[in-house]
Length: 582
Image (spheres, helix red, strand yellow):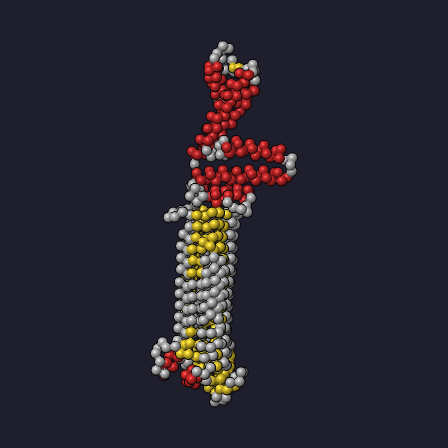
């Protein structure tokens, strides 16, 4: 049935109409649909049934079959007035059918406060060609409710406080015009709720306080027009929820304080426009929530104060636009932004997460991880392959950066080294120079281990070269000076090596025929020790006054001592200058 028309014309003919299932109508409705140029687009003939005849069937409790019929000005509010019923008294209809039908009304087709007592209840392929439609406070007691492929030309649709029972609701392929779609306080039971491939048109859509049960809820490939989409305070149970490839308009998408159950929620490949998207204060009891390959538009995207402590949330390869992204004070089992492109400020100050996956992301602005009002408890964080064009704000100690990276299970030394190198450069730019030094040390340590492992994989013979190189870097560069990041450690190492050489030299004078020529032969051990300390000092520091010179094997020790002294002084100078100049 055609949905895109500008006007229509209905002519009631005094000709009997037999429906495909054999029901006879005394009159035929001939309906023509036109475009804006008055050109006929579509013509259809249906059986015509007067609304009063339908009221009579309802009153005596007969089944109502409107398949392939044209009905105008149907109103249960009018029926209640005609029968002296209260405005909110339920009207019971048995075994209702309206397949391939057309409803026409100047203002509204009214099914409010109706109780459909028997199944099936179907409006499949039915068109509401004029006026709004209301099923407010209706009750579907049994059977699946079928609005499959319906057309609501006037988009003002009211299903508020409707009870759809437990056998499911089918709105697949429906086309809804511009207007307000109201599903507030609707109860969907435990059956499947299908809005797949539905076109909602422009205008606000409200599922505020609606209750979804254990069945599947599908908005897959649904198209939402411009207007607010509001699921505020809605509740879901154990069923899966799908918005896969759904298209959202420019209005706000609101999932605030929604209680999700334990099923899977799928926003994969969904397209959001420029409206804000919020999941603030929502919660989920398990399962997975995925936005893989979704385009999140240019509005703000917020998960503030949300509770997903048992849920894996993934935005893998999602595209974030120009809006601010916030996960402030939210808890997750895992939160993955893997391979995302982050173009604006991202607040990742989550309250808790077992895993925060930032691998392969592109950062163009700021990621904020620095604790402020509360402790940020992230057990494992991965930054492998991060392209950092912006800044990451985090604190080495408060965030436990070292522990988060070393807790990774599936990364090798090269990957860890690369992450520490990225952090080192980031800390330098953000002015956190002490954190920069700590990151640099871990970068060099992992780089050394990676080089050793790669060397050992080449051949066993190569270990003859790689092990000495590794141990030299470990003891000289790392242990003695933390890769020139700690002047005090280098200074302590200077003192240790100096006195070690003094005691070595003193020991040699006791067990060998060697000495220094500035000490008398009959000098006491104490005098000889301090003379040797003086001699070692001028040798170690390459002062060389000429008043003391070595004799015997001490000449060899002097050369070694001079080299070590020059090296350690240079090492100290580099470490000291590094600290001061920054």
